[in-house]
Length: 193
View 1 (cartoon, rainbow, N blue to C red):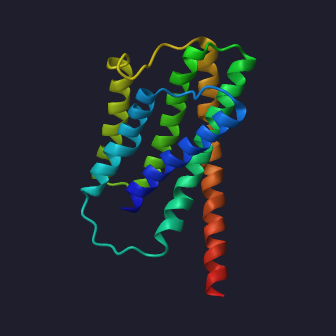
View 2: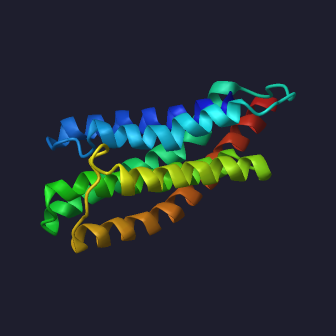
């Protein structure tokens, strides 16, 4: 339940932040509903379903809401900042608007798979199988059902920006996750005192 809730919360926090930023900054929301559906399917829905099928005898420990929030917030913030900066830099580098949605989909999927890797630890055969199914599903969706999910070939400028921000996402996500774990430990220590 914690894993599924974390995946769902990640996408919802990200969507809320990006929607607010779109309204405040007066720009068009960069993702199409079909692109969000592709991400939701292979970063949230399929892994949450498959992980829920795994038997789990362990009891819930600690505070459920705080733990899921602290696990999902780094991924949501990382995705938000990456796509926000992609949109801002696309104006600077005159990247076609049609490329932004596809590049944003790729950036969102990178963070989605990063949080999925974190959720399936410790790794076992079943967890690796879930991860591989999700990655392959996303690749197949992008390459064979691109018309359904509004995925298109992107320009060199958009591809370069996307690759740059994808690399940055890995570092930002790792540092934000480390920071959230530290904050969580500080709160736990204060509550015990």
